[in-house]
Image (cartoon, rainbow, N blue to C red; front, side, top):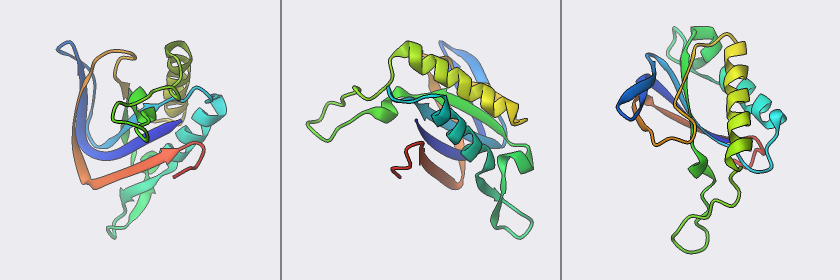
Length: 149
């Protein structure tokens, strides 16, 4: 499971002209699910993201986690995080989970974030979405449950 985590001052996701999720200060999480992922991958990433110390403390150091500052999260499914372009120019998505598996793990991940006491908004799974955000910092972190980066 892969995630691109961006600290934002505000963000929203729109589907067919309707806003499906909107947050103020918090994190946007673009989440990709691999065909080998299980609930343990989702557990690892949910715990890691909820505890990431990427919000400033009173001294201006990144010392506070989303749980510390009561940040909101906007979680958007993004299978293209598993696009492989090592050969050719057209991405291969063979490593991405099929929709049924990906949806189940995406929804499980969202529930794990909510269980951590965080407000969590979402996009719509398997829909064309427009994501708008104001990256704060900018701060962008890449995470992989296999710890490859």
